Length: 117
Length: 113
Image 1: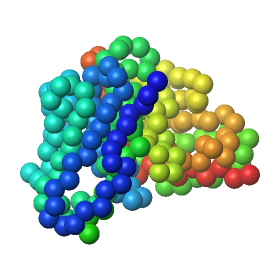
Image 2 (image 1 turned 120 degrees about the horizontal axis):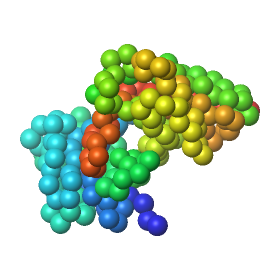
Image 3 (image 1 turned 60 degrees about the vertical axis):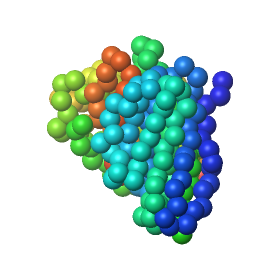
């Protein structure tokens, strides 16, 4: 079956512009996560949803960052007034509610490489 | 989530076992040990997790010490494709889905021919 997909795969924008990054989780997965990864470092948690409800947004660096998942499936991470320090790989992951030996396993998408000039 | 400590890098010969250590001395009783890996620029991939018993699956084995303050991920017969950054993560595994993963720096494993 299809895995987690993200679009666009690459985004180059100018400082001050808004960007919207999209994540399409694995069908039926309840939880959706956003992470940011700088070069040479591990992913850093941003926020996550169960269904359409945002459960934890403590990792969002400031109020320029927001995320939504209005119908409990596709999610959008929006960065307003982008700055050069926002340049990074943005990764989305999803996980299932199903119990079992691998519950809570997160499946990651390929990421969106954001470059702010 | 409890903090973890891993070596920055390790080397292993192809075909040999790779043993990746992780210290998590502040782990709580309800926290599991998870291992993920990240191959080059791909997204992280789940490997295995455990609470206190040793675990084995098709990818690896996980050995957790009796006091649960450290663990070792074992790749029994490493291949070149196992070259990756390996992350040891400690977190509560909830009965319902949803819990952040806190990645550290990980261990860069290089498998040499």
